[in-house]
Length: 219
Image (cartoon, rainbow, N blue to C red; front, side, top):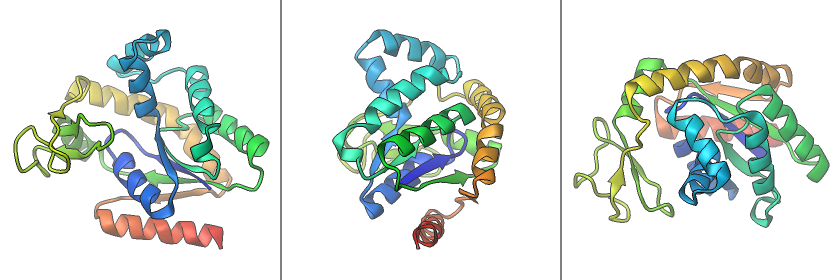
């Protein structure tokens, strides 16, 4: 099964996606992680991606599709995956559908949409700090969920970092871009009756409700 985590930046796609990944034994694939890897390696593709992200813009479809499809051909995702941040446009969604039909015709593809008010999203992101240890990746919020020791990850003890683009101006721009580009995407999955929308106000309850929906889809 391919589970698509939809929602604006800061809605909790990564957190809930990782929980579902552990519970369902499916690899969690984040386009953000893939992009940052390219940026850190200073590849030509990484430099292009960095230019878009730093300005609060989305990476072009063709670049995203090529990057993700390559990842989905790897052995650890042959039984499906949790997709965090992909697809983001109807073109990407159709490409994913074609990929699944070509490589695994029996797999189902469903979308989970996380819907959170903009002001709450902004508060989450501008106060967000993330563990610098990629294997850990724990996320904290200096306002609502601060680490026990300032600047240090509770889980593994690594340094916590704030992304350069996690500021209010850039976040509002990213939200505007997301909403403009996601209209057709959400409609695409609604037409295919393959979307479940939820406001994840309570994390545990949200995960429980999502897993129940997924069980019903598979039954």
